[in-house]
Image 1: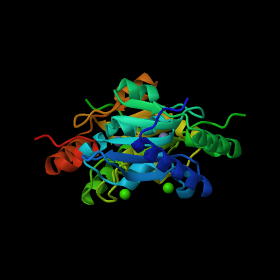
Image 2 (image 1 turned 180 degrees about the vertical axis):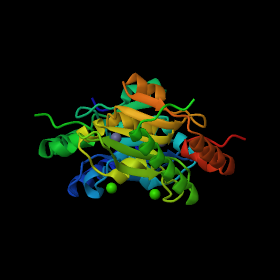
Image 3 (image 1 turned 90 degrees about the vertical axis):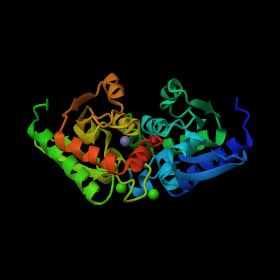
Image 4 (image 1 turned 45 degrees about the vertical axis):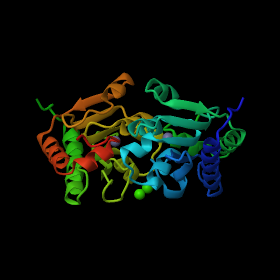
Length: 162
Length: 162
Ligand SMILES: [Ca+2]
Ligand SMILES: [Ca+2]
Ligand SMILES: [Zn+2]
Ligand SMILES: [Zn+2]
C-alpha cells in the first residue's frame, strides 16, 4: 500500500522519477535521485538531482544518489542535515554510505521490490526510511533489468545469473 | 609499527601516496587511492588511481577512493574481487560502502590516526583490512587538517569544531 505523501515528498519522488525516466531514455540505468531541503519557511526546495550514469559516462560510481549529490555540489554539513534524499530504488551499500556520511535524517525510496540495499544499516543509524512502493518506479526498473540484465548486475557488482 | 609490505603493497601504497601528494599540490585534500589487480601471473597491476577532488572539481562525492574507482572505469564484478584497494587514509562510510558494493577482498590503509572510517564494517563483512601506519601519509594529512580545517570537516560532513 503506497504511503500517504506530503507535498514535499510528492515533489521529491516525482523529481527522482523524472530523472530515472530521462536516464532510461538516454539508454542508461533508470535510477533517479534528488535532494530536497526543508527551508525555514517550510517550503521544500530541490537542491539538486541526477540519475545513474554508468552507461552515459562509463561511470563506476555515479549511481543515482551519488549523481544527485555530485550535481548538487559542495554543501555545508548543516544543509544535508536539513534535507531529505529521494531515490527511485532502495540505495545500495555505497549510496547508503553516502547518506550516512552526510547524515541525512530521512530517505524516501520509490521501491525496493527490484533490489534491497542498505535500508537496515540506515535505520540502525537513526535514519528515517520511507518506502513508497511506487508502481512507476517498479515498472521502469523491472523493464530495464529484463532488457539489459548484464548492465544492471555490473552496477551492483554482481555476475549476471546464468 | 609499520606492517611488512609485499611488492604489490609497496606499489599500491606508493601510488596512492603520490596521488595524495598531487592533490595537495593542486590545493586539494591530500587523500589518494588506487586499485591493484593481482593477475594470473601474480604480477600486480595498477588498474586506476585518483585523489580527492572536492576542491579541484567542487565535488561532494570524489573522495580518494571514489575518484580511483571512477578513473578506473567500468569493470566486471570478478575484476574487483581479484583486486586490492589502497587508500592513504581510513575510508569514510561512503567509501567503505563502495568497497563493500564491489566486494574487494582486501583494503590497505596508509593511516588511521587522523580519521577512522568504516574499518569495523569492512571486517564484519569479511574484508581483510591492513593499516600500515605510514609516516608520510600521516604527516601530509595532518598538515592539511591544520592548514584548511573547514575544507576537511566539510569533506566528512561535519561542522568545523570551534
Ligand atoms: Ca568514467
Ligand atoms: Ca561538481
Ligand atoms: Zn548505489
Ligand atoms: Zn570517503
